Amino acid sequence: MSFHEQLALSLARHADRVLLADDNQELTGGALAERVERWASGLRHLGLRRGDRIAVQADKSIDLVILYLAVLRMGAVYLPLNNNYQPSEIEYFLTDAQAALFVCTPGERDTYRDMDSLRRMRIETLDAGGQGSLPDLLGAIVASLPPEPVGPDDLASIVYTSGTTGRSKGAMITHRNLVSNASALIETWGITQEDVLLHALPLFHIHGLFIALNTLLLAGGRVTLLPAFDAKTVVERLPFATLFMGVPTYYTRLLAQPGLDEAARTLRLFVCGSAPLSVQTFEEFERRTGHRILERYGMSECGIICSNPLHGERMPGAVGRPLPGIEVRTADHAPVGVLEVRGPNICAGYWRQPEKTREEFREDGFFITGDVATIDEQGVVRIVGREKDLIISGGLNIYPKEIEDLIDDFPEVNESAVVGLGHPDFGEAVTAVVSLREKGSVSAEELIGRLRARLASFKLPKAVFFVDDLPRNAMGKVQKAVLRHEYRDHFGG
Image (cartoon, rainbow, N blue to C red; front, side, top):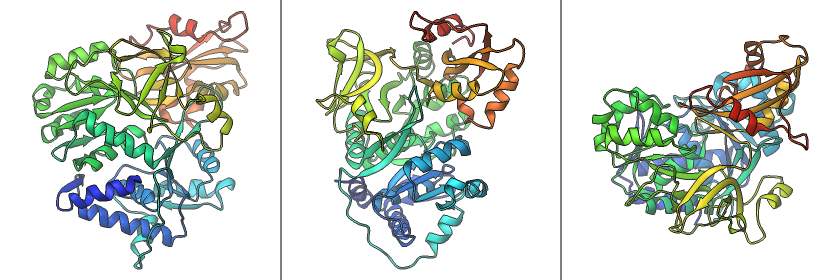
């Protein structure tokens, strides 16, 4: 089945139960199904068709959820875009994906309409309150158009994921990928219609969109949307939930909140992912709340791959065993090696990059994750490092090459290297090490200030160090491991 077919069954089963809510409204399964059908029909009236790419950079809201589900319902392809991306970054994604529609916030519409490369693209708006040109257009459409058939191997989404060189690449996620991963998580985490998820994650990331939202809706559980993560608000709302999913940064900030101990008592399960959880945070959270956080492991191309058990030992520093239907191995079956994965959760390849697809997949269908891991005799996976220099800060992926290219363009700069350093709040902090043509010709504050207009805020360096020369190996390659070691204690992480 397609994802929408599975969703339709769930919404029908729970037609009279509230499945989606925020501070302003509640939608039963029946009401949600009706609005998704109406928006899917409306998108078709606007001339959009099966397979069209619809890109979205909008604030989190119930209407954003409805737009996402309507896109899948009509057989189009959903492109979630980080709210922090700057116009120049968005321009790349829209042109690479050949998007038929871009939905942004009302205040950004004119910025994109003025770009030469986007003049022929349809651009509509949607804000956090459900207002904008898109809902106005869809609300004025009365006649209903049935959607075209959608199969399990049709594209559901393109998720642009970070790499270590060049531009982001678009992982092609199919309906089969979404359904298989959500179904496996429902089984693994014991999710039922009795669960209430306090949803504090962003909807532009697979963690909040596919892992949290899809899974609860297919299980018939209730999703309570918060506009964003705020530690104080989360603690206030936890007594009304049974599930919470977050990144390590969320948990370190929750630990700083008074009242967490009592608020967490009603929770059935805390889940953490998108970046490694420190043993210290794991142990302190258990000491404070009595809960052992369930850590899992995934990536944009695969959804969730491994999970610690719902019942059984949850080991700090381990990401557990593969989900049902998923196989894992290390390259060449080495004791320590790059983790490779095969299963119905794996993406169909990279959008318009067949050579990259060939590079990342083995002939027998195993996908090469780039993460270095061990697998013990019980099948428990531990991620011990990354083959690539990918930085994960606050659960978001950042590739250094993009930042290095921008820094190297500055006339005062000879060359730069960008690395991630351990950080107690963000997990890793973006750090630039820069060699200048003339010492003292530019300050760290000036460099960061120039980058601010061209990079999303989460990609900005949190520290800049100046050196005479970058360390290199015998082949002339910059030794980023040396830099990470030299500055490892800067943030106390």
